Structure formats: C-alpha cells, structure tokens
Image (cartoon, rainbow, N blue to C red; front, side, top):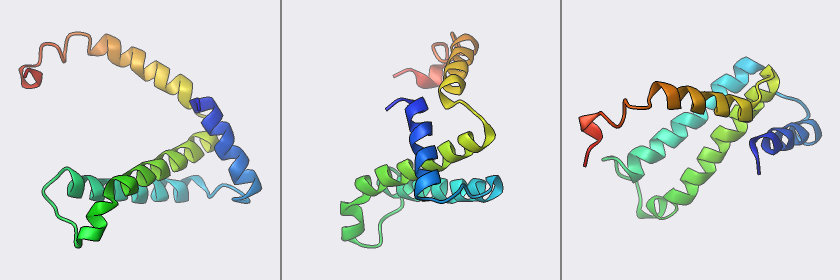
Length: 113
C-alpha cells in the first residue's frame, strides 16, 4: 500500500465507519498516547525494563506491530485533516536529509563499528 492509498483508505474508513474525524487537538493527544504505548513496549523488548508476566513478553512483538499501526493510523488522520500529502512530505524530507547529512553520518566516529 502506498502512502497515498493509506491516506485514502483511512479517510474512507473514517467517513464510513468512524462517522467523522476527531478534532485535530484530540487526534494529537491520541497520537501522543499511542507513541507512549510504543515507547513502553520498546523499553521492555529492547531496553532494561521487564514485563510483569511471561505471558506479556510472549506476545510483545505482535503488540509492538499493532501499536506502531495505531501510531500510523492516527498520524494519517492528522495528515488528512490538515491537508498534508505524506508521500510528498516523506520525499521532501528524504531529499533534505540526503543533502544535509551527505557526509555527516559517514564522518561520525560514533557510528563506526
């Protein structure tokens, strides 16, 4: 699925099942909540925090994929609401980073093996 298709699919879902978009401020708060859920799982899967039970650890990677999907869904909602073309935005930022960081990362001793 392309970003354009994803934006259209989310818009169609909102208009047919979700009834309407939440306002932009509400969706921003929901986005922060979803990002926090990703952070919580990252701290437990890849960081030093532990899960409260072995059952939680067993499904953690599936949970992480779902939480990242939630983040993407809400971000797409915000893009749709504010008229942002995410495909064009990503292309622009990739070009900007390619120019700005052309030698920066290659010359960073912290990134050398």
